[in-house]
Amino acid sequence: MLEVKNISFVADGRKILDNVSFRLEPGSFLVITGPNGSGKSTLAQILMGIKKPSAGQILFDSQDITEFSVTERAKLGLAFAFQQPVKFKGLTVRELLEIAGKNVEGVLTKVGLDPTEYLDRELSSTLSGGELKRIEIASALAREAKLTIFDEPEAGIDLWSFEKLTDTFSELRDQTKDRSIMIISHQERILKIADQIMILEKGKIKSFGPATEILPKILEGQK
Image (cartoon, rainbow, N blue to C red):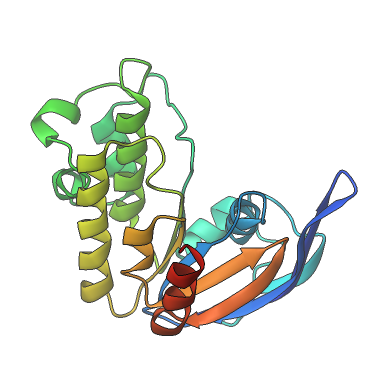
């Protein structure tokens, strides 16, 4: 499905990503973790086309998408949920979700929001940061994309919502055999439901493999 070849990214004279290469097969559930500043969010944004790599190549379903725009990648089946949600003045939650896909009530429920209370509300400052974050995650889920990338989905949401979100990711992992999920996170509960884990450090892949092999090393290192 996704093949990343020798991706590097340089900004202000500093190499943020350094020769990153990996493959992601259909049905994968990958969590990318690592210290702050290791290049995790930059990698996610490069995969979605928000940023352009300084070097390297990205293949999606065997097609070179390195120079594709965000819109072109979305049409191919990539979806992205930002760490900091974008506000859309004048647009309601219902309208956003209907643009994204189907089952608008179902995806809201999955992220812990009551459809009867939120569908007709405007995406504005009347919503808290946590509410906006959950709505954006719902819009990504509604897309039912081939590959959905979540950049720190736990940021800015309360503990109950986080637990609900973790359950949702577990369900998606078990139900979707042909779609893949990539999550940028350092949360242990999310790491524990991954099939694969990648550790980025100083812009390079330190470890990448089955969660059964990588997670014990992470937990041991935290002791």
